[in-house]
Image 1 (cartoon, rainbow, N blue to C red):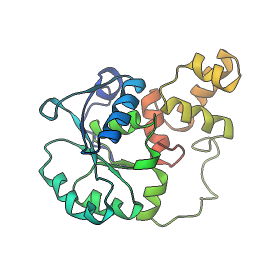
Image 2 (tube, helix red, strand yellow; image 1 turned 180 degrees about the vertical axis):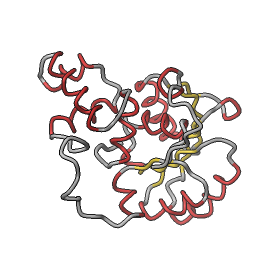
Image 3 (cartoon, helix red, strand yellow; image 1 turned 45 degrees about the vertical axis):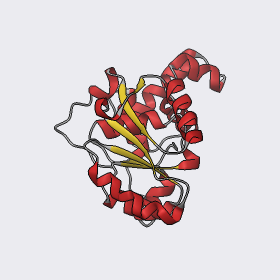
Image 4 (spheres, rainbow, N blue to C red; image 1 turned 120 degrees about the horizontal axis):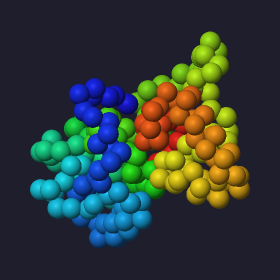
Length: 210
């Protein structure tokens, strides 16, 4: 994941994301429209008024590479939805700023769209592994930073779904105070000043799935 330091991070926190949903598949369009409505802080708009495009590569894998040429004509950041991990590198090469697998699209898509709008490049862990060989964990990593506990991993996954501290507490069966404690711990370990920054950093480190 890369960051453009010239773009204000506050944009991803305060403003609804204007998303153009570009797909020829009516079933996928209906499913994505419903998902984006449930996620909140997202407005599905026409292409001319969008800040980010959620673009579908289609079901026919044999035509995907040819269709990726469409990305070069886009005048906005694009998150590409692909059906095959092998299409990750071609999508990035064609100009996609984010790539997600068709069967992995979930509530975390909000974090991906927010990150791309803020100047980042994102993809889920499975796709990232097709581009970068797995590296063993460093044994000399600082103890107080980046090593999330299993509970903290659960908390940051719920943060990616946009849940409040109270809803996180309800989901995990813990007190509001304990949920707040875990959220603060996650933000500290990830070096984040906001919940959105924590989610984006967790995505970069492969700690959560979309």
